[in-house]
Length: 370
Image (cartoon, rainbow, N blue to C red; front, side):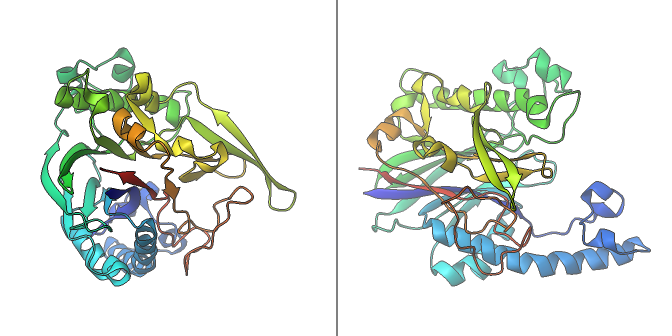
């Protein structure tokens, strides 16, 4: 009895328009910046037209990436709400996979833009085993003070003890697969953002992600008992906005690209994997081939890294010791630089920068649930 599990940051699956760019140039789409727009009413009209035109190609590519993952259950990040998810599944994904993800769940978290974590599940696995939703529990309300996780580093960033830990949520979803219980923890950690206070964006926001990781681990240990939690059947899935390694890119298309694997001394992922509590199964892939995200701020700052994770409990990882996850990169834009030998055939109509399936790649793994 097997289960195909996936995670995917679908990048702003929205069912509403964002007009904030009229007053805040940081939020203005670069297409509209080309035009001399005289009024807010004109801006709103043009932004609606732009968003609608761009979204159709984007969501076709998103659906192709999900279809390629062949997942029975897919954990998602950056979903606006259940209505957006239903409209996407019916209007786009259904055309590719047919009667697929009938079970859909999400809840409002803490993100200021309203993007949440979500899960879509088939009624049964590809092998015909029933997938049953049991319950879901949001932990969006948990504060630093409640878990005793407030630190001077967090205070220096302006985080108060009574503030909520999770920037989105840690959504706990209990399911049964062929009668076998399993728990999923859906997360989307604090983004890195721009450099500040003399630190790069990753370093500056690291204390928040470390607290989020500590909170996830505590939730799991309290649920199953600290001594036995690692042996239970669970997985942490999502975009953790952090990495333990990255592949730095130098050179150019004319003279050739050069790739260098760089290990990081500090990562929030270490909080979760410490002591063998769980395993980052993507690290079963070769070092140069673990990336799920291409980062660039121009030719002087480019790297590939893993931001998207399926962390299996120690017991579940041991049960699936030979399982190696797949990373679906066909929906990446043409600007993404692939190491030699990793090139893929892009989905139709993928652009240089956009449209694309997402800025992230889906990760999927087949698990033995017997």
